[in-house]
Image 1 (tube, rainbow, N blue to C red):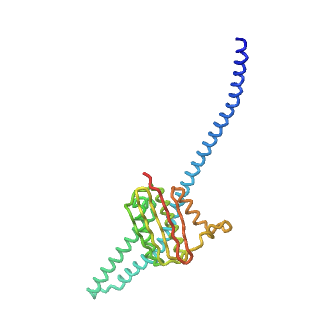
Image 2: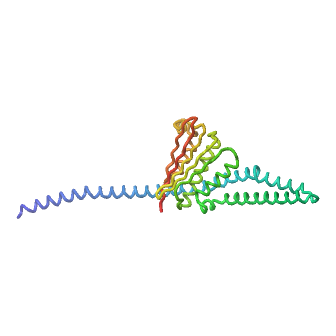
Image 3: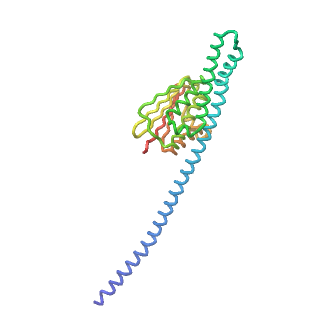
Length: 266
């Protein structure tokens, strides 16, 4: 009986030592978990802040580009239409009834066209319009403006049934599309560009292919020339913020294809 007490005492000592070793480990693990949780929360807040900043920047850039389109459209199209209407009015001769009616009718059509174009431009200035009419209609409107400029021939193909996309993601996605088109017009030297928008139940696919001069993608991302791939990296960053992927393939003298894939979530 007396021999059991030393054994119990030894067992108690061993248990105490084990607990003293385990408790700091548990405390340390809890501290590390809390630290990891705080870091995760901060990263999530940083991503949300980046998303809000990107969204605001996209809205401002869309408006800025639209203002550029408006000034060009007013100068190249609406201004000329109204000038023709003015010319018709100034050359009307009441003494020639048949010619007078023809010029009145022509002037009416020209003014109606100018009003329609102005309304279209006014709608395009509002970023809410983009989210209201949807991605496909917004792309169609953008391509119509590009087509009128005569710089390049855009072709649009839509596959599948358009589904509802998060309005904020849609706005950023549309801005990425605008950036791609701007780069093609400025740098590709292309005559034609094909835009394909495909909808499935789970995925939105957008491919933009031009027949321009292309470029070396490795050089574009070269670290020793950071500015060369800045636009591409910026678009890829924006794509990641909306859980999309963006890839660029290009062959010198044969053109470039930009592919964007966005998972559709309900």
